[in-house]
Length: 297
Length: 170
Ligand SMILES: [Zn+2]
Image 1 (cartoon, chains in turn purple, red):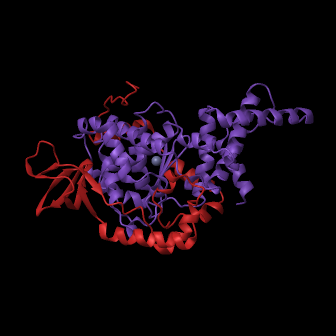
Image 2: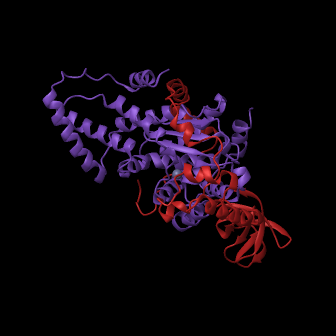
Image 3: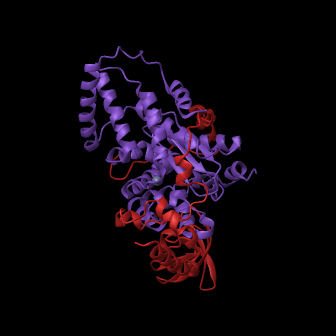
């Protein structure tokens, strides 16, 4: 499928039909362009709010672009299991209503990714190195926290001078104008397409600010504890990462885009040791995890 | 930094990592315990900087061999060898350029680990066409909240109100 055709399909999928474009008026378009540029500039500085719909469309574009590069793992039972764990964790947060979507990608490196709007992908390489469900919960809760805090969006907004990011900011700015009576723009399709460009331009190769990573770790612990898991699952995963030898780490974008595991452990001890201790006797669910994640290929 | 220097630096780091792999030391004086629980009986008191061999993990606990004894320590009481701050020389160049870890990077991000990337490369992302069929497939795995709740109940997971530290209840 051509890029354009795929985007058209994507747009249709993501779209709750919008009114057809109003009749074009050249003068108006020029004015719109100027306004958009102006708002785009402001948006680059201020922390613009995205609507949940915008966030979801952008995230779907990012996910579609991402899945163009990496295959989903074929084990549907595992996919369903990860969705159950993830959906349960997400229900313990203030954004329970997002269309939460979890997936395992068929890749043996150690990776986990969060996309705006509630899509979280983990690599099979990571899943197979986990010991129990509370460890999986720790990983998913960390990624859920990135979504809750809109970390990717903040990173996109602050990446002034990065073409694909500037594009997203411009599209959202146009949407604001159209809401105030400007020309209706097909913002969902544009955002989905901008999401694809973000992936091509290396969105997932860019590290987030380390403060965001520490915040996601802290919230990950809290979310796991709320969901009834031993929140030390994340501590266990970090200690596993800290012990990886270069040859078995196989290369991980997660590791390369995150602060070191040792640094993250030290930060967790500083910020949430009380919760880790208090809820440390909650279930870890070893057997259920082994049943679902035992290697099926 | 010249490519030669990058390689040289990584070779040196790699040599250090090989020696330290899988090992850890205590980062404070701590009790080695029989089981992974604070109320379990102590087997020995280890001073800070005791070398240990890592055997396993269980929640916030690590199983270790230390001074000819096997027992459990809180994971927070360990300092892990920083094996990931290294890469293999063969992948050093591509990774360095792939992650943009050149002089443009702030010292903060450039000290983050870089490893050879197997499976996911910049090229792969750059040439990707959006796969909408795979996106639909992914979205078909979503589960309704009620299913997730039943699943939690089956596992004996009970929702607990846990506040975010410093934010009060939310
Ligand atoms: Zn993260």
